[in-house]
View 1 (cartoon, rainbow, N blue to C red):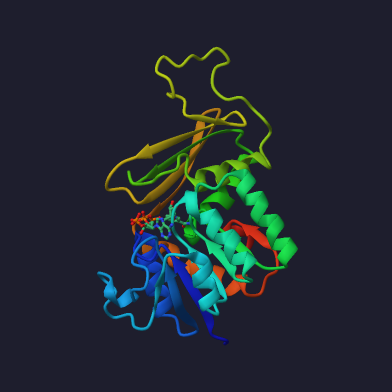
View 2 (view 1 turned 180 degrees about the vertical axis):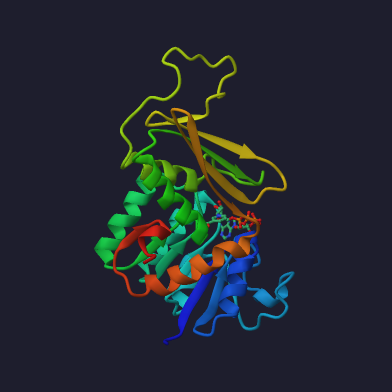
Length: 267
Ligand code: NAP
């Protein structure tokens, strides 16, 4: 198998650290450089927790990083403010983005999709790289054909910046594609405290819980006469996302299109 040269943006983050481990421990992956917003000119091994990683430069300027490094793939695990810019710049330099960063707007996703077709390059954006979470979304879509009343409850650690989570939005989109449109709850219901019924997506409701101690969890609750059904997925640590990141890096090298969602690349 050919070696895939990779840049990781956000290496000191919780996801970034797992991604560094993944790349270092995968025979056909090579860590070419990392992109941070500090520590320009240092080596990754100078930073806390990376002493064992040799010969990986740290860049703060993405253009310089892409010019100096003959990379194939950029893995972005940063923040919604910079992630879309990183992906766009990578595509402009002929580097394929694999993006785990969540919170992009529809316009940003659209722009990236257009840039991919213009450049004829692959790009994979997945709001959830956990394979179990992808199955939860697929099973929820199956169930929504038969259960039209559904509430999504997503639960994350309290450092998460965006709400609702990318996974919850993606689940709602997938359900909407098959669910008969229905405005749920009593037609005259009133919130006595604002936000009590959560966000409204095509008449179904999404609730975001933020608590220390949580990682990434979601349950999709369906109800109909006399029965409820709950589909739930829990990620207990960030290593749970890495098998999906690995599949995405391998797949993006064979693709020339924009893909949103890991479910679209799993057989
Ligand atoms: P995190 O621990 O806060 O890590 C983000 C990292 O990005 C930090 O090290 C931060 O540095 C760095 N950063 C900020 N601005 C940067 C820039 N301009 N260039 C390079 N690095 C920059 O967050 P996390 O938990 O790892 O999550 C990262 C992203 O992945 C979030 O969007 C999160 O929602 C998403 N996520 C996705 C999945 C998935 O399966 N797709 C799973 C979990 C999380 P400082 O700390 O110095 O600011």
